[in-house]
Image 1: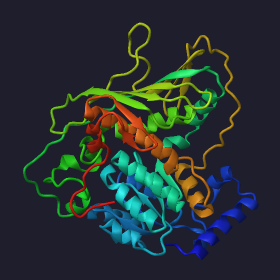
Image 2 (image 1 turned 90 degrees about the horizontal axis):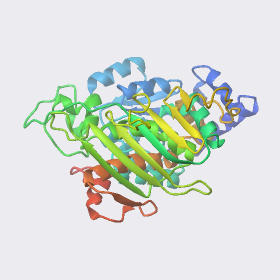
Image 3 (image 1 turned 180 degrees about the vertical axis):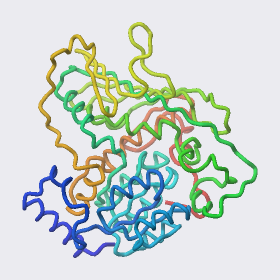
Image 4 (image 1 turned 135 degrees about the vertical axis):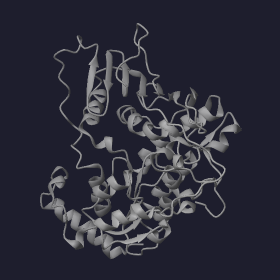
Length: 430
């Protein structure tokens, strides 16, 4: 565990910087590299694709350990950070006694185990969405973060964007009046994959470590890199891939937390051996929150989506549609519009009240140093990830599920248990 003296030094340095006038909006303008004594010592687990983007985003700090099960990816990252130690096995990264924090960008099935190990060893964690592979794993991470007072952030980078902030302000200002109905939709579809009876992984890949806790199966290229998302053993389809990004806006704007019931149905259209749905609809019922009424939220992907009064598909390929008593608001990552447009001509949004983000990764870095809060900590983002993953649980169960968030149990059917918590391959455990 990082020594108390180092933690205290980083905290004091962050406090002095703020006292000297380095306010949060100005942190984005700080030099790319702080003095060595003020930099975090980071380990990065998974260095390609999203991992490469995350590695670049935290490169202002000292990258002391790099980890990837593919030696080709690891070698490229090592060229950028020649002083970092390199490993195939994430456990060697966690073993670093002087490490402050880790960044985890592995496939979903390998999120939870390194995150659990890191927090138990006193390290802070940045982890990609949807936080973990199963609801049980997400709840474990939420509890551990609270227990160890870890500074955490889930990789929902859109949360740091200006557009989401403006939408949240409009909703919270009561512009649309009472909101009871939300639609969230995404056009993405999975690609078909292939199961094989035998396969030989490339020599650069430690396939056994890549599988980790997942069921053992022969190697095939359609299991790895981005397409691992389309297998239940490794990912959770389009919902797990995109749900946290889009449902985040509804959770934030309406203070949603845990649904009380979830019902889903879908279709598998592709001709592959993987069974994640191309088309999916999930109906979530959220309870009242304070003086806010219950909310009925529906997720759609693959081309399904809300329809207008004439029965036509509503809006663009991707977005969030809030339906209020005074009108509607349609938003994507970078834009929003109030509907019907004629009614809202000349509308002036409320004055900005949510501060501009200093950057999703920067926010986490500064919070690690100051022991301050983050906006997508594992408590907020964990509740979001649980809701997203419950959609897959309901789909795979084939029936409506009733969710008791306090006990993390589905109360109306035991069939859900095998989808809430998976079995791990021998030798792997949380």
